[in-house]
Amino acid sequence: MAEIRQQKGVKHYLVIILLLVITVIMMIPLFYIVNTSFRPWAEIKAYPPKLIYEPSIGSYIRVFTARSVYSPGTAPSEKELAEMKWYEKIVYEDTNEEITRRGDFPKRYLNSLIISILTTLITIILGTLAAYGFSRFKVKGEGNLLFFILSTRMLPPVIVVIPVFLMYRTFGLNDSHLGLVLLYTAFNVSFAVWVLKGFIDEIPREYEEAAMVDGYTRWETFRKVVLPQSVTGIAATAVFVFIFSWNEYAFAFLLTRNTAQTVPAWLPYQMGVLGYDWGAAAAGSVMFLIPAMVLTILLRKHLVRGISFGAIRK
Image (cartoon, rainbow, N blue to C red):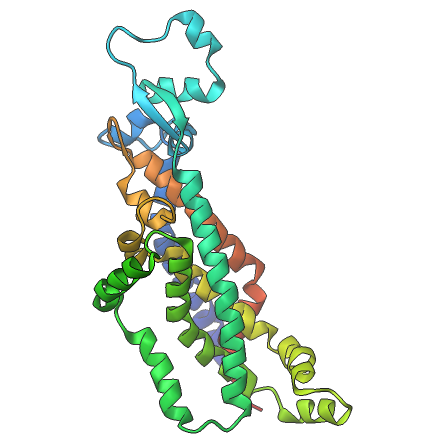
């Protein structure tokens, strides 16, 4: 028995070490992006790269601003330099640039938030109602309907992009928040219906029958009995839908240019007057990671339960 326990203990520690190694390897790209975002302009261009450097927030300032390079002979005087704001000094010392106006990143960031939040809300509402209907009522051709719903998720976006572009141009939905919200919702509802149906199927019908015996209507039963017990599934589904909408690139790139352009479509073209600004691109990527990371951390308990829900049946 002691030998068996010892072998299990060794395997346990080996699994932990393996998981730590995999985690470190997967975190290397994230570390590289964060590291690049705090490197001064000269250090980003330096070869070979230095491991030790003086951190700078110049990249974060540049991603939020539009700038122009001081032409030869027009560098600011000592008096003008002293009167500069702190962030203007950092940019000047980093890249010899002058801040001319606020950049486009805040607007693109707000677009991503609006579109992702609205898509998530609409998708969860429609998906929950549809999943409840499929779970609790006899629907003729249910299997075919569910497969048809799922098939919309299988469709590569590239195949439908031209018809969608022509349709959106006809109805004036190009470069609009509503256009992307409708499109993202259409692609995410199928995922929400399939996931949430599995959760609702696990809720005993007896709970609803007891509530209706007590005088609850079908809607009240759904709202007061089914929804509270589906919170785990709804939260897990909301995280995945938000992340898909937040990260989506193809439709955002092809269907938007200015008004509704999101961060993924804007960030790859972060060209500065000195060439491609890798520091600003890295800083924008770090800022872009924050909402999805925060949402995942806040709903991590529901997310873990949602992934493992139904794995063990009593």
